[in-house]
Length: 145
Image (cartoon, rainbow, N blue to C red; front, side):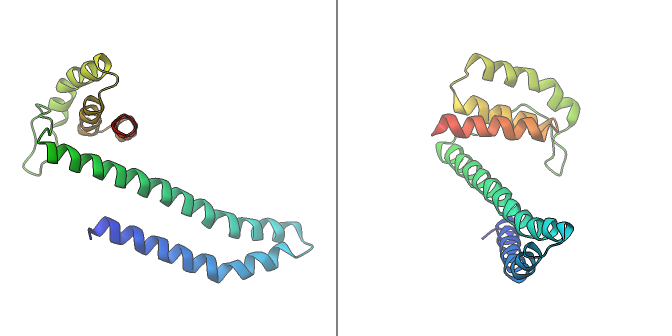
């Protein structure tokens, strides 16, 4: 199992321990007659549930993206972005910015092609735009289903 998966599992376990240990406190605070205590009790119960939801959404996205990466590797169709990389493997920003329009145009010309959106996601990531990279990957995942 990879270290990000282990870290995610550890985070989930710690959150569950937190919920169990503080649930009694949250419930006790909700039962008080003091408004601020009730608000704190509510937040003690709600924030961990919100955190579980965020973790679930992120894990689902990560697993779906990992599955799509495996599919691309299995098919032998890993895209050549035509981007210069540093010895560390990170993209040279100027090279990524220069290559990006080609990948964006290809995805725009092929809006139903999951592989084009997958490639666009990698191009966004190489340009340092993680928000759009994730959005393009979500579209690639949805189209590949």
